[in-house]
Image (cartoon, rainbow over all chains, first blue to last red; front, top):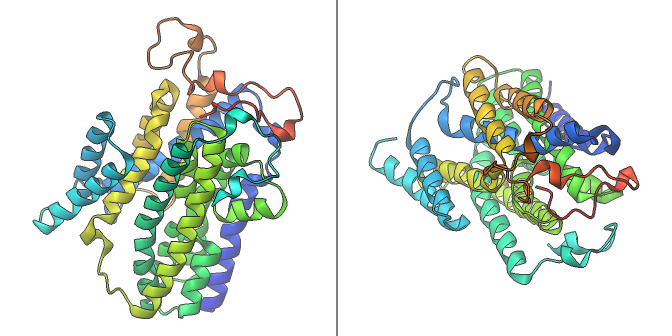
Length: 104
Length: 279
């Protein structure tokens, strides 16, 4: 399989997956149960994404390192109602600082 | 960036016009998410060319596939000598969640024709997260479009730089950019966790993903979390929201899912365009 085949086929499939969500008829998603599920879907997916990005290593095993420390700081800042940009910058600073000190 | 406010929307509710400070706030979020994500484009471009892709092929992935997780998976598999079919399969598995985001994004974007094609292409973690973090419908639309466009432009620009120049910046982790991305997603999901349903869903989803991660291929742990949304959404006690003492899921709260989504009485295709408070 040529590299161009890989590039273009994965791009085509990626777009089809995105577009498919827009083609689902609106009435399929109506009704209290289905609309609750679709409302909760992004919350579930993004929470799972955060957890896998911040708390797992290469093999998928649980890892607590500089990322976890940064997320802990993030939660504290959010509880204190800190500004969005402050939260993002401080999280980066915590992770970068811990790594610079060699622990993470 | 103001395309979310342009004609083509079904109705212009005067309450749905964004105050200038809200616009600025949303645009600031969009730009900071775009900048944090964009920095990773340098890494992607550098890794892609190191894996044997041409500059044009790296650029084609960033412009056409445009979903970071899938793109990194492809170059990772190719660099390790994996088969092209494995690269395509993993990329697609990671891309399924974009289609699931689209189910909810379609509800507030209300797009048709070419705009729908553009919206689909920009449907990624970042645009969805910033869109959904906004309380009002017009805010969601502005958040989605502004973030999608900011990430698209910066991601493609930095892919080009990385592909040409190699990774002059070094590993983005050195600057804590991986933690910045996780923090941004936390901050964007945060306002939605005031509803008890959403909080339970998030905790359940996180637990499922952690449990699945060591045993499943890339992309699957996040998809397994769909179970959390389905279980919580379907099995909710019908009378729960009527209980007077329920501080976390207050009936008057704009994030109460039952108050937010009256079943549309009008044209089903238009949805409930008048409810500005849907989470």
